[in-house]
Length: 410
Image: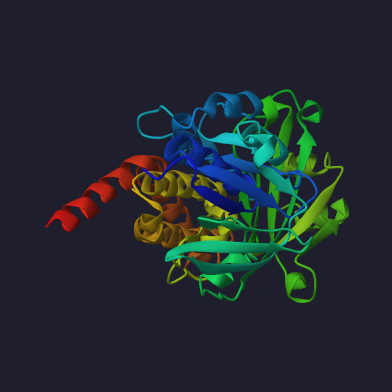
C-alpha cells in the first residue's frame, strides 16, 4: 500500500468527489485534499437516487446508516404508467438479495451527509482549477495544480471529479463534445404534507405524448421530488439551465389525455427550474499517468436510469481498491491504468442504456410502437435488478486485481 503521506488532490466537491475522498482515506489510507470551485458545498435543491449498487458501497464505507436517516426508502416497487395513470409494469427498487433498496435523497442532504465524513480541514472552497500538469520530481512524477485565486500545489496524484465540463479531463487528453438529447427536464420538490393522504410513497412515472413525469419521496417523506422530461431545443439557444414558470410545466401535461392525479400534483408545485439533458460519447481513456477521472467527468450520462451518482460512487470504491494495492508512488500510474480497465465498459453500457431508457419513456424511435415500449420496460425491470443493482464494485475490483497479479507473476 502507498504510504499514509501520499497526497491526492480531488478536483470537485460534489457527490462523487466527496465519496472519493471518503473511500481513498478509509481504503487506500492516503491524504486527500478536496478542491471545490464554489464558495460552499452544495447542490441544486432537487432529488437524486442512491441505487442499491451504490448503497452497497456506502455501507462498506460506513456511511449508509446516515444516508438512510436523511433520505427516504420507498414503500415498495415503483410503477410505470401511461398518461392516464394506467399501470404498465412495476419497477425494481431493491437488489436480488433484498438487502439494499433505492434511497431517494435531497441533493443538499446527500452532500451534507458525505461532507460530515470528510475532515473539514481537507476541503478547500473557492478554488477554480486553471491548470493541471504532470511534472518530474527527480525521476518521480507529480502533478502541479493551479487555481484562479492564485493558489497552487504539487500532489502525488489528481482525481478529476469536476463534472461534465471537467477541466481535468483535458489533461487526460479527452475532449468529448456534449451531446444534447433533444430534451430538457423541469425539476423541483413539493412539500409532501400538501399531497392527498393516500399519495403513494413510491417512485411513479407517467409516460405519454413524447414526454414523461417522474416523482418519488425524499427526506423521510417530507418532500416529493419531481422530474418532467419535455422535448425542446431551448438548451441549444443559450444557457443549459435556468428558472422556469410553473405554468410552463403545467401546460405540458394539461388536457384530458393526462391523469387528473398528476395534474393535481403539478398544481401543488410552487417553484421549478429547467435543465437541458446532455451527455457525451464514452471516452477512450480516463487516465494519464498520476491523473484520472471519476463520475460525470469520466462518463456523463442521462438521468433516465437513475445511475449518474451511483456510478460515481462505484468509481470511488474501485479507484480506492486499486490505489490501496499500489506499493509505492511509482505504482500510482499503473493503479490508475487498471481502474478504468474495470470501469469503462460498465459505465459505457449504462451511458447507452440511459439514452435507451429515455427513448422508451418518451416513445421515441423503435419505441413509438407502444406495445414494444411496454414489453421492453417490463423486461428491463429484471435486467435492472440483476445487472445493475446486484453489482458489487468492490468485489469486481478485487477480482480484477487478482487477475492482474496473476498475469504479472506469469
